[in-house]
Length: 548
Image (cartoon, rainbow, N blue to C red):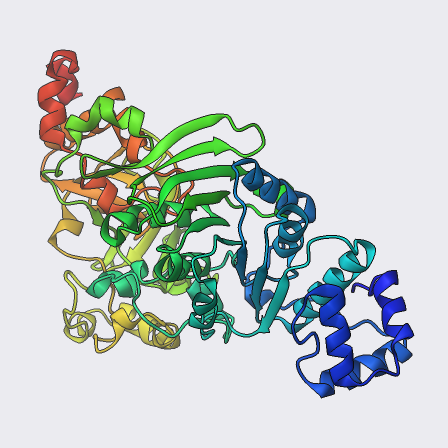
């Protein structure tokens, strides 16, 4: 809860007999806010609350991805922008929340003539209005721009009405859009979502299995660049590092007329209490398109590195990448993800005293025909592994294969799976639609190669583990990536090349450590093992290591 400031409260008490239209006129004169009370009903309700000494402000709903910017940080940002000789005349803050940036910008930029804020949380707008009124009542000689605050869903708001009013004036788009993904909001059944569209143009199965997910802050950022990048002005958003990476990556395709692209790393834990990597993303509009961003520390301005496009390749550290760029090509082997079943409670098993036990702590017997040891990301820590902690039921040798005939020969396995049928029916992914009952995904001939070189897709370490059979083939789950081999010598040779210091340095030069999934198939497919073998042959390990 937040109370109305003393000056603002005194103002309303002094003018409590003023009617709706006259009150809005007075408020426009005092605060610059156009239509402080949008409807007469709001005005009447407000007067009743004032008389009852109740606050108008309530707490937010989690579904909006709230990380409100503290005033100290927002003021530091606007003062930094001012030090770069920015003197905007028009300011836009989409998803403005409680308006910390609007308040700081008004305090910092005396050049402002118009301010536009859009916010879906009505209580936030009330708080902002009262803050603005309080500020101008305390500072009657301060520059007072015309302020328009819209209570609206950002995804349906018509920004053209603002664009039509810029008329060549210097623009600043500033803010801290929600740090939440569309899939998270979908889980929350939120209405605060853009119209469903594959705006990142992910293809086919990629859109279904993850690449169709995106950050709401990314959607808003790209929408602002789409609409306003040709205007004279600047852009300054607090967004997740993963969003900044995506914007720079897509810049090769989008070619927005932006330059002077900078990324200022902040301490999100300190500023927001959030365990996420985030930065201030800054660029200049109406410029020759650039495709790299220089990273700095926000608090010290110390430069870190430059990320972006170099020689048609995308790198997280361009200076380091240039030392190893000859390794960037196409891997001669196809990297695969492991098996996906989305039924861990019944499909992931442990052996105990001659029985199997599932995650429901049920003990039972099964035929061994479809049982395989399976490794997870947390198992891929050492140099080699051949003993699994977990086992799984592999109902198919390839995607779409019928399961009924196999199960008819295995009565215990069939009875077990049908007893837990509801877990399979509850799977939400559309990849199982129209597939046989008990289908799995991410399975093929490659899954059953006896030797594999594997890496975790969940962790940030880049060491590659050799997976060896132990009486039978070991499989991996879908959090892992691997390449498969028929014999030990080939697998060991590939592992040695992948773990070479030169290869490791190369991987780190284009791997984004702050990404949710730093290791991806796209990254792994860029490792040209043939080239690495040729270039590093003089430092290769002794041949007898291949038979170790």
